[in-house]
Amino acid sequence: MGEENTLEELLTSTATENVAIPEITNIPKTTSNKKLILILSIIIATLLAVTITLGITLITGKNSNVNTPTPAATTEPKQKPTQPTKEQQAQIKKIIDAQHRLDAKDPRALGKVNAPIVIEAYTDFRCGHCAKYALEVEPKLKELIDNGTVRYEYNNLPVLGAESVLAAQASQAAANQNMFWEYHRALYENFATGNAEYTEASLIALAKKAGIKNIEKFKTDLNSENTVNAIKKELENGVSGLGFQGTPTFLIGYAYVPGVMEYEQIKEIVKTELKKKKDK
Image (cartoon, rainbow, N blue to C red):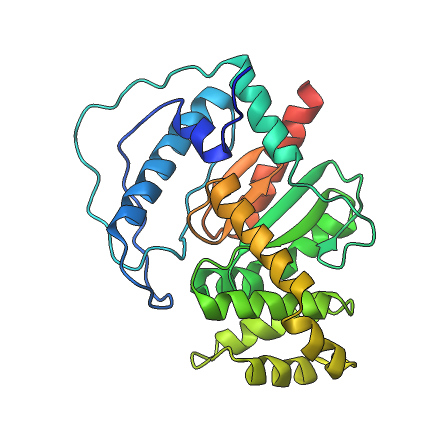
């Protein structure tokens, strides 16, 4: 067997299809990157095709790494999807399974470690669509977490620059005091004001506001070697390992879902993933 591919490489190796990409608005300004827009277009198009061939559920939403409207879909003929091999399907399953931490003491996870469906969320604290999801949709997941259906694990994917990386480090410093979820919400509420600025001073002030007790430890952990390396590792895993190019992105069971969703959409994906497990 040759080298294992990234999740994105496996998905894009199976098919291509022309689709329209949703228009992206009201997100933080980032440097224009035409290559990134092209890559994202290819990823979403091929994922739609893979939905048919692999039975992977996909809902396209709004994603943070594009800040210009995209043209309408072309009318060129669609290429028929290629059926993936059993080896490719096994690699996709292996890659997704490897993302699950399943640690009962994980301060950045909610729900039972033996829940039938694991949701991996990949977000950036300077992403407008991530903020909308975190403040409006994420709290509703409590229903699925509390009834034992879902295990929910958070992953930093700070793709929007140095301030995003620093905010991710701050969230890890909060997690070290079992205050991740309180700080996570405080970061997004702050971002939603429209004038958020992430500096060491502002992140420390926000830690005090969120109720973190040991501020000296928070200051030390913010830029500690362990924290810096942990965030760097998560970013490399998301971008280089999995091929993710924007936020938010989710793995719901074995469904690869780029873009923000409504709660009812998540429930439907969870329902589909549960049925797949039951049918095996």
